[in-house]
Image (cartoon, rainbow over all chains, first blue to last red):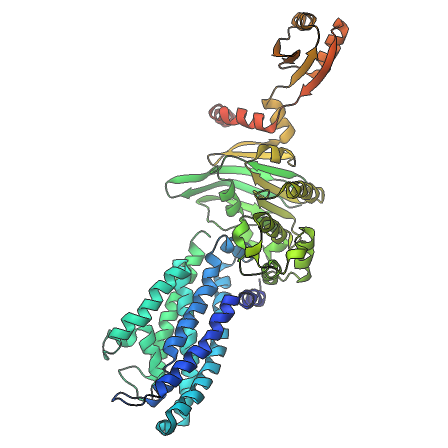
Length: 240
Length: 306
């Protein structure tokens, strides 16, 4: 069985569910709006012009996570997985197609979101943004897109393990909003390798901690990869 | 021709054995009714055939191949397992298009099966607005999508209105007449009797019977003859002379156990007994089934001897 029809089918699944399209579209306004708000406040000792411009990913990632979670969780409702796996018995390949169908739209939306946040954020910052170089800006936009994609994949993998969207969101959202927010300020500890802290290094002009911008994304990619592998293992091994 | 072959199939759910060394073959060109009480292992067996559950031991094949070896399986096997399979927020047509795309089935097939199952008028509506009967029809539409040679339907009559039940009966007959292999599970005896040619009966995960339906009934339920007469004395005397015993039910109604209507009719006519009514009472599937489950232990012993 070829991969393209599986991908086509998974892409159709996303396109034909309004809640998924809505979650995907919410990434842009959530990120851009909060980036603009954060950029109006340029005081404080730890002010970082690049992170101000991309501060909104903290909120936008919740939409990306909701998207990744919902896309996979839809398969675990009712007898949906029976119908899916009866049509596509190659579970590993099916799950790979699902992951690609989640990743590509988020990556695309992430690039647009990054671009819009940059424009909006820099406009809000005004002269404070002058210190940002072209390479900082490109790194921020690409980093924002990759980061959002990895968080969506992390959520997708976790959902396949937990077999429930509610369970996944009640693990990830409190984690991002509370745990990481609280311990995240303590630099140079284990907090540096939490998936969100590590991945957001790419959005800072000044690197903090041991991880560089791409090293940080690689750490987040490892988290997402681990979640996907665990998800694929669970899908393959367990009875549908 | 494509048969379903279940060979020494066993499935444990923890300590509970859902399917116990099951072996049977479902042949093409006829409707095979899959009977058994709830929890007998019918659905589990179907999931094992479709590769959705992993067997503890044994194997199930379709046309000699395991389900996961089929390329574009919907073109070979169509299945209805659960009417809740379709996402409530998707339209009926989109649900089918998604399935069709994965097996490179042209999109127009979605519209064809929607037409065939009578769902064309609601194809653009969200599945959550469907009644249970409509969801059931959508599940059947999905099973027919790839024009498969093998069709497995788990309790397809669930939630169907009387018109729908007549429709599914005709559909099953037609699929079998077209040479397809049709396996239909049910716990409704009268319903199964109306469409099945052959029966596979399970009890607590084990095979209790694998026989043509007519034979299944005839060997388990002795026929009876119902008679109404104005002269009870003449009737009982005539019957007793040939060793038949008649049981009275009042208002001149009598039944003769273990007798065929041809014999009793001739006998009573020769004796000049006035007859107002004479009818054969064929055994029903329900009677035969209850007889089987009543003597299940005995039957299992018999199977082991054989």
